[in-house]
Image 1 (spheres, rainbow, N blue to C red):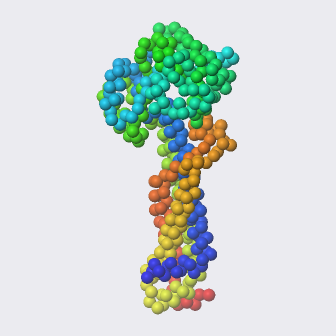
Image 2 (image 1 turned 180 degrees about the horizontal axis):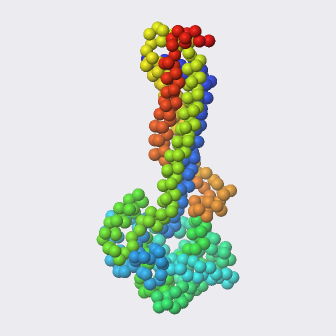
Image 3 (image 1 turned 60 degrees about the vertical axis):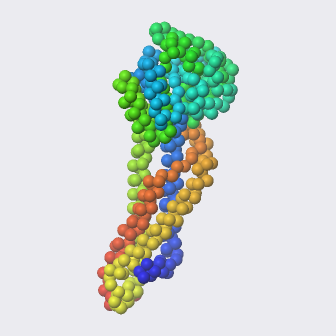
Length: 404
C-alpha cells in the first residue's frame, strides 16, 4: 500500500520529479562514460606494452632486466625450453637476443636496442608483423632489419636502404654488420618505435659472438590474468639462477597507475554522491513543506508516524532506483557504438602516442564501478530523504492542518 501511494505521490508534481530523475540519469551516464574512457586508455597502454614486446612473462639470467649486457645470456636455455613446454598455460614463446647498440645511416646515427628474433616465433608473441606499414616483415634468412617509423624519420631512411649496426661483442670488441631495411613498422607508442629494431637472431648472435645463446624468452599464456601463477610455477622449477618476471614486474609504474585510477574513481563516486544527496534532500524537503496540510490530515485520521516516515523514504528510493536503472542503461547504450569503432582523438595523436595509447580509444566498462553505482545511488537517495522524512513526523497534526 505504501509503495503504491509513494509512486502516485512522485508523479503529483511531474516537473520536479523529472528534474530530479534527469539529474540522476545525466550524472550516472557521465560517470559511466568517464570511467569507460579512462579504463580504455589505461587498458590500451597496458596491452600495447604487452603486445609490442613485454609479453606476459619474460625469462632471463638473474640481473639482466636491470643491466642488459651481452654476456648475461640465459644459462642452459634448452633446459628452460623444456620447462616452458611442460607448462600447459603457456601458449607461445619466442627467444630473443637483446643488446644496446648504435645504428647509423648515411646522414645520422642513434642508440637503439637491437632485438635478434626468430620471425616465425616473434609474430605469435607480438604485433610487430601486423604493424608493418612499409616494406615487409623479416624473413629470417638475409641481413635484413625492421625499424620503427619514428626511427626511420630520424635517420632519414626507408625500406630498401642500408644501415650499419654496432655493439660490444662477447670478447669486449666492437661487432658490426650491414643490414638492409626490409620494412618499417608503427605501433601505438612512438617512443618504442624510436629505440627498437629487429634483425634475424642468427645474425645478432654472429655479430655479438655469443654462439647460439639467447638473452630472453618471452612467453604468452592462455590468460594474462593467470600470468603470475604461471610465473611462480616456472620460477619454482628453474631456481634462483634465473629471472622470471610477469608483466606486472616489468611494468610496475603502469600497474600502479591503473591501481591509483581505481582508487581515484572511488573519490569521484563520493563527490558525485555528495552532490546528489544535497539535490535530492532539497527536492524532498520542498515536497514535505508543500504537503504539510496533507500530512496533518493523514496523522489526524490515524496514520502512524512510522508509516509516514517510510512513505517519504520509499518515494526517494523509487526515484533513486528509477534514475539508476535509466542512467545505467543510457550510459551503457552510449558506450556500445564506441566498443568497436572507438573514440577518435586524432587531434591529440602525438601526445597519446608518447603515452602508448594510440589515437583511437576503445572504452572499457568497469563491472566494479557499475555495481558500485547500482548500490550507491539508491542508498544516497534514501539517506537524502531521512531529514525531510524526520521533519514530516515531527509535525503536530493540528498545526499541520492549519498550515497555509
